[in-house]
Every structure is written in structure tokens, then in C-alpha cells.
Image 1 (cartoon, rainbow, N blue to C red):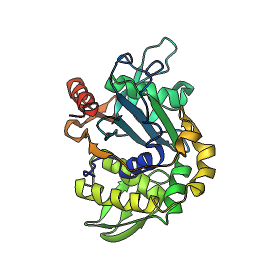
Image 2: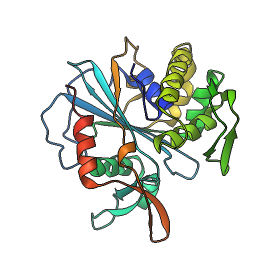
Image 3: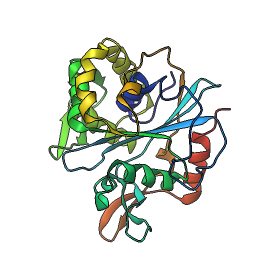
Length: 279
């Protein structure tokens, strides 16, 4: 597996739970959101997000899969991304942070899908939203993720202002992992070397968790257009993974007194093209 510059645990979780059942056939774009939903290519896409107690979505991961190439592309989207949030009564989007897409106009999971689809001009075939408690429970069920940090770091948290981690060996619980994912998506403290090492640790630990141990929480907490049967299919050998990064295009901007991460339209188009390419 190539080093990921995105949300490492979410990538591992998606691959562990969703592959190969979701990506086993030809994608159906009839109900996929986005201007390009009538495409005729063999690429399947999935959006996986985590929401907190306030219905904000701090962790957002896109995956694309091409069956004949046996490859998966991953793309992590920062929570503060300036995005066209759907759900307005007149059908026009209102721009705000991506993290508010779930709660805006009570649009829920479908609103998140259409917002991300509009942002990248990309149809999204499958989508799933997991609450933070379930996300944390899955991590905690493995005993947490042990990893050695090269430096002291301070990262933005969810239930508190921030977490501070010391240099050296740490064991991260579920909420701490979520905080690291948010930090990594914006390219703050962790680099590709960290991402690759943590990914390997997560996959190794998740592979030891019995499917029956995950079933109780998944039956109650998954939102989206993916059935529980699909989530719990037997897993087979994983395909090769390639990371597509937004980090080179990030711009920090203040708009109307609020902080946002923005991207040039041409940059997003190039990322979308790369994300759906498997050459």
C-alpha cells in the first residue's frame, strides 16, 4: 500500500468494511448526485463521513474504485473547506464550511453527498455516515492505536478545545484518532511517513476484530444508501491503494470574519480528474 496523505483510519475502515461488496459490480449513476451523473465509465465512488454530537462532519473521505484495474483511490476533504452546501428552498447552494452540510436545512446524509458531489463535479454512488461514538467504539474495540510520535503535537479536538500529545509512544483512543484525522486532512502535523505507518497499524488491528463484534453498533448507526448486508459481507484480498491529495491547493482565507480552507476551481477539477483516473 502506498503512503496516504489523508484520513488513515477512515481509509482502513472503509476498505475493511466496504470492500469488495460495494465495489463488486457496475456502478449505477441513475440516482447519483452531481452534474456528471450520466457518465458511462466503470468507476464506482463512495463517500464516508463521521458526524459528531452537534451533527457536524469533521471527517470526510472519498474513495473511487475501478474493478478491472483492482485499484482504489482515496481523497480526504478538510472539514473547513468552503463548499456549496445544498438544501436551499430555491435549489441554489449556500457557501459555508463543509462541516455544516449535514445539519444545514435538515438535509442530513443526502445533503452531505450532494454538497461533496457539487464541490468536485463528481457523481457519488454510495454514501455512509457514522456517528463519532460508533467510530470511537470501533477503534476502542481494538484497544486503541499505538504509535510513536516524532515530536510533541497539539491538535484540534471535538469534545474539548484540543489534544496535546507528547513525543514518543502513544496509545490513541477513538476520539483522539478522529482528531488526528482532522489534523492530517489539513496537512498540519502529520506527514506521509506517519500516515503510512498508522494505516498499517490500524489495518493489522482491525483484521483481528471478529465481524460479529462490529455488527451490533453498525446495525444502529450507519446512515446512507448502503445496506447492512453490504457492510458485513466477507472481505477478500484488498486492491492496491493510491492517495490523491488536496494539500498542494489549500488556501487559508478569512471570509466575513470566519476562517475557511479554499481551493481554486481549476485545482479542484484537476483533482477530480486524477481521483477518477486509474492509468
